[in-house]
Length: 491
Ligand code: NAP
Image (cartoon, rainbow, N blue to C red; front, side, top):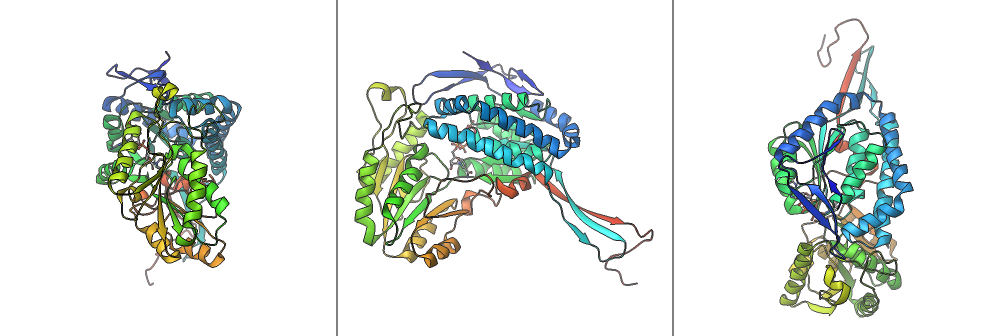
């Protein structure tokens, strides 16, 4: 079995403790590889390497930094098939989505490489003669990146790309469920020509590795994606040290379907949104809010389509839904299914762990639909699995009220032919993203991505905003008058 060390200063090294852990396929239980289990001391070594590499990396012109990212993207493009399979084997999403994860990483790197030729500042006239004013963007220094397991190529690249092109060096902690994807990504960056010390990866548990990254005084910016509970802890620790923090967290995303909607389109949208990636997307549709006039029709069509989904080996391209990512995930999701039943929600399809034959080697849960009442826990808490709650409403106003009555605000969707209501929904849905006549999933990398309320703290990844987490703005005044000029002072 292949064993990976920590990646520090361009070397694969064992952890200080010598301890290791393994990663397994959630579909088959097969052990895929072993990894060094880092601790606080290892994070210290990684930060030291990142600090040492900082000046040289920063002095490399930004377009050159972008070229390295572009090279990494081209390596990934060449190897996309294999990398997609790797994502599927380690994380469990079906192969078309495994390749999609890699494609998203490629898209992001290609897009952000061009940022090396932008990194724009502003220029403006001065209030004084022969004086010139401008802003320049500067890297924060060493950035700490902490990522989840559900997009093991895409999410790390959403952070690595902008951090690196802006001239930061990095200490990266991947999720403990998907370290093989992370180690592979690091080897690709290495092959693309990233100098030693610019990216350092420490695998190992949230505490101590993640916590040590958040608390290390030489890490100036922390970018975290994960659950609200973990994000709250990251925020608390980082804010005590007055760090720059970007948080991208969970969702409880609604799809609203009004009475005038194209129901066939809406059914296909919710199937993809709710059961794609076995519901393990931050943008997954977990609430379907239906106008009462189309409720029965929509429910019947949806249940019949859901029952036709094939669940099984995610490497088989005819399969629609793969396993969930771990035993812990499975337990949590089955726990919510129990809660739904106890709360009195009506289970209309699914609801069980699949057992027998190959299912016994993995974590397979049937796509599950509840008819629920708004206010039940299954309608308000993030389940992060293939479980959809359907809620009946009287009109558009009630639909929006229900959609907004959760602590989260990541993605949202409305299906309607009424242009006025579609535009009102853009105004009124409390979410970082709104789709019209499309499912809640499907971000594109050249647009900002992030949420409001407890989903995020205002940071936006991707798009033109991606570099904000990783740059500071410096304001510059250049006086070429040859005399002392005083702003705001009457002469
Ligand atoms: P998680 O348990 O919060 O973990 C995320 C990452 O943070 C992992 O690397 C984890 O390490 C680490 N971590 C956990 N607690 C930490 C702490 N207190 N301090 C520092 N690091 C800590 O989330 P997950 O289960 O991996 O991912 C699922 C969650 O991510 C869902 O809530 C989903 O909605 C959210 N998500 C959000 C977005 C978005 O862009 N908004 C995108 C994808 C996923 P270990 O793996 O070692 O525990």
